[in-house]
Length: 161
Length: 293
Image (cartoon, rainbow over all chains, first blue to last red; front, side):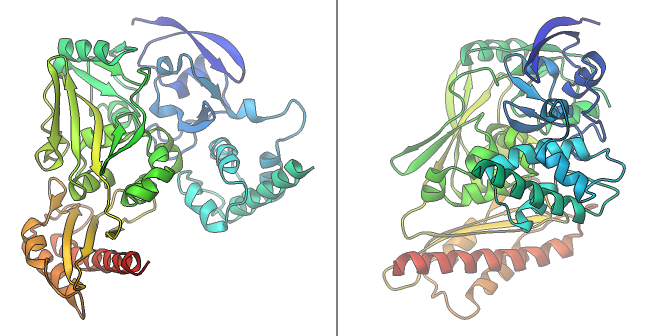
């Protein structure tokens, strides 16, 4: 066991980590930094539940070694949640019943936080194409798509004010 | 589902990386996007002793047009290729191929150098490398060489890269102004590797006949392939009636795909016929549009 000390910038804070190089970012976030909002599903990049933002871009935390992230800015679902209340995307998913068990939700929120910045007015097909990277076993996706559409509208309206 | 232990190296220059690669040879794996390597490590299908991370090296991520060709740095992400306005103009099949890789988050991290070095026989960018006569720029501590795509892909997950060599860049030819192209695939689910994919480029000569033509197939063998002899016989044809279907049927007759858990050989032959026909028709339609413009 050869653990190494290094620093990670997570949700705007610099955190000290002491972990083996083989430790996945998803595990360091959950076990070492106690940020359990990042969920671990398949552990090989298929399900999308562990998606976080690396320098603002969505990335599977289970396909990154934490030690690779020195000098990068990591944002988890905790970092996307306001101190009080919910973000527009969280609020819209809540209103449209875009979750049941909620296991996949953090990955969907991180993914679409990035995507709606890139494409603020996506069509339903475009939303479904992006959502194909996040498995949800409860909802059948319809309400998630509606939630994302609503969030996009809320964000556009907010930006217009 | 946790990777085996390894020693981690994060060189900040390519020279440093090449020294490490020379030192550790087959015991080391290069990590760029890690979107295929890390799943294999998590599943313990890969257990390298050393990981050389090339993400911290400056200057390996770029899209640089040169006269008649485009050089793309090895650590350029699929997402950058997908949205590159230069590539959409100079080599539109590449953004189209990149858009089709995996999912959004995977494309934000996965790299072109990684995709080629992995050499999955059904992957999009290896297919494009074959179609567009790419040169893979491989660097080692001993120097630099450019490997033509046709000599690069040896078998499933096997390339002609030597231990100690790192893919530094890939050079594609730019399409000519009047050159059309087509890319068709069938995958069982969005984001999956294709069962079969087919791509073509085509130019019409002054008489409206098929001039320069290129055709490539993926998912039909241990590497993506070019249909060189069919290209020769297709050149000079009048592209009318069932011309594309005839060429595609001939391709299906020539190629000997294998059966596996994804599809039978017979089904793959049917896919070759349908997808190559569509790719050729797309290429012709684009070539005609360009000629009319």
